[in-house]
Length: 222
Image (cartoon, rainbow, N blue to C red; front, side):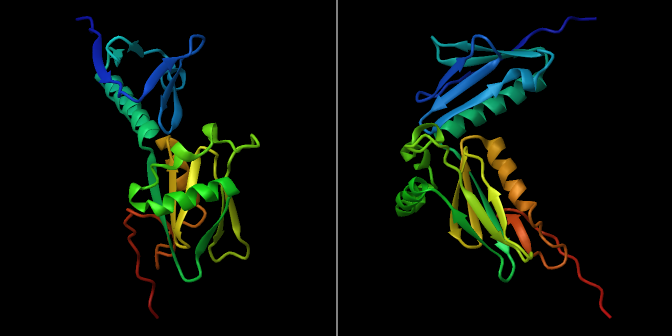
């Protein structure tokens, strides 16, 4: 039986991004113009099947493992982190239904940022993290958190508190935009909001992703 050889995958680190490893743990910190994000190898790979080496001289990351699948996984995760801290990720949600709508409760500092970004709408919110207070905090030191108030045909309004790492913009009462540097976090928030009122299988009313195709059924006819 032949011994497996190590496979190396090289990933270039962009000029405006830095990657550092915590000496006492397996956590890597990726920092860019829009903020920072972390990658914990212990959570991803409990058995140590892959490792990451940082080549600071050539400004590159080397992923090393015996399995090509691990190399591909880590390469995708690291590249997503690079995109997140440099450009960010946007996910749009559409609210469908008569009387269904959303409103936003936000701090004054975030509202001020929204007004600035609305003036340069074509930039798709990429300026947000560059003009917000660092580490998601206000001048008073308290985390900036948005609350979405959803009117979805229930007897009560649904108040959804968004994590501080994700920002919310309302293009209209029926269109929600989520923006953040961590793709997984933004995706989780988007699906949590969607689950407050999933699309109806008969009329399609509810909350859906903007690129989601909903297949409806025809109700029984008497």
